[in-house]
Image (cartoon, each protein chain N blue to C red):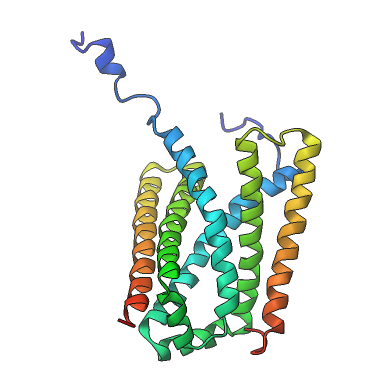
Length: 127
Length: 130
């Protein structure tokens, strides 16, 4: 006979209860990426064959610096949310799935940080 | 349990267009995720200085890389257009079958046209194809 109460046994079971927040964040980041990514691709079309100095001047414009950092955050956030679901759907070995999910978060976090630091390094190099 | 039939049987069942678009959304998402590595490489090259940038430009100028970039451009516009389609569904719009098929054809057409426009612009630029 267990002395645990019904509530004690039920606690911690069931869903993780953060599904709605994941769903909502995926849509919010998607919505933000519509203008941000379109702006970025159109901008790339203007600078794709530019010299290094021209690229640095472009990145260093304050509004470009801000938008590039915003894009870095939202892009890698959206990437993490999306690939998380792909891994959940197709990888069914528990330890392997957990390992991939951890690697994904490390990768997405590092990706965002590398992008942000690069943008800041370029932007601040002009002094 | 292991002998239960799979449904739909993917080798027999002909996938409807809307289903193909759904799985393509996921595949392009993964492909775009891999593409962020190229983006990071380019950004790091710019941040490292003119020599690294010149080296990156010559790598990106290789035919095989341009071919991947072309595929990436289509994947980007497809994921963008189909993502907007999904956002409309999330808002409760366009669920009727004729609407779903119309938006499916629209997504395919718009993403293909935008991809060709981008690469037409690149090819027509003074420096030639980037």
